[in-house]
Length: 533
Ligand code: N01
Image (cartoon, rainbow, N blue to C red; front, side, top):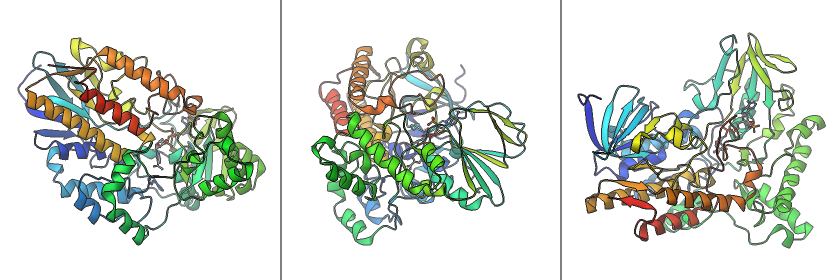
């Protein structure tokens, strides 16, 4: 390996999404280089610009808290911001804090090798950059690598094919078009009602029906905004003390402790609460007790049957094979009503899967569909996908691909034993999307930066996690997921959305406070589980 064009840096940050951007800011007293595959900042909110893309956590929470002036001055027009506003915010932050000078856009990381003698990472990019740095922080996101099922015939199709996570910036004109839409997760549910209004015809290919709760989006009330701004410091602290780093009403009663009348009233209130996920917190045991969960499932099925006029379509839209919340609850606007339109049809591809693209559309095992445009909202190779696409070689030439062959292992979701000086933000076995990701990302960046600062202060050059600590963390992750009903759904949380993907539950569902406490106590207890030298 030639050293001719090697550039030196202290820290390489991978990804200029919200966590990567904050990491640049927090660590700017070092020589920091951020490598980003997109042409702009914002990560998820740069790539996912499909019609209807919108966050499902209120924006006064889903925003940075590190700078008081920023949170006082920024105004969110809506309660749950749409993608253009989130991207505008990301750009504003990048300009306001002079982050761009550290970011190399359209420059994906291709491979990384750890030099055990120098205790440094060699980082190589697709553009030919070669950086030598002491630390790598992978802020690569949980939902970064789009999943495209390998249906044959893609080149044969005469129309256009889009993936929602690679949506063209100039948009797509659906007027007069027959549109086929594959995927009924959070993305599909947001995009389809808008596309149905524009297209001549919308054919929805559904493999598994989703539970969807109405979005409470509305213009942000001025008094409400002022109240948040007057109390930001306290609210940010409170957020970190809740399960999902978000202030919602957390119930004290289990379903069984409520009478049938109370249950019905609580569920109706949760449905109309205009607060995402309130249904999952209707009772204290929705995610831990199958009977309580089924009560909520049946409530939503009743809603579907009351909204969708065609009884056969309504039945197909009712999820029956997994607990509500087992897959992430979808938040939508007019999704079920959309099926009452004359130009929308639902095709069940569970029994008769999609087989291939044809010249004129799609073929399932039982029928052909003529289409002008095909949209795939088929999700992501989540949590591990972005890291797995980089060829990463740690100590003793071990590769991350081999290490994670049976599923990802980490210590505190932050480090992988055998891959020294490499930290991850929102890595496997962190709360990730089970908690509000901007605030918890900021927290993880601060935790990581404190570790790096301490290393520098003490003149240390090498930090790794022990295999034993990794094993213990896996036991903790398994223990909390065993207590929840998440395991009964095939989803991106456990990799079962991708055929052949191995590994267990990849998200920490013990709640953010417990996660943070375990991370903090590891450091406080003399860097328990780490090797530092
Ligand atoms: O992806 P998904 P997503 N044949 O994996 C189907 C976040 N997010 O992009 O359920 C036919 O949920 C698949 O079917 P099945 C949020 O965390 C947030 O929608 O696997 N269908 C499913 O219906 C979310 O959880 C927001 O049987 C196939 C769909 O494609 C995460 O992103 C908005 C198929 C994929 O659903 C991912 O959501 C959007 C096949 N071969 C996203 N393969 C908000 O903030 C896959 N499917 C609101």
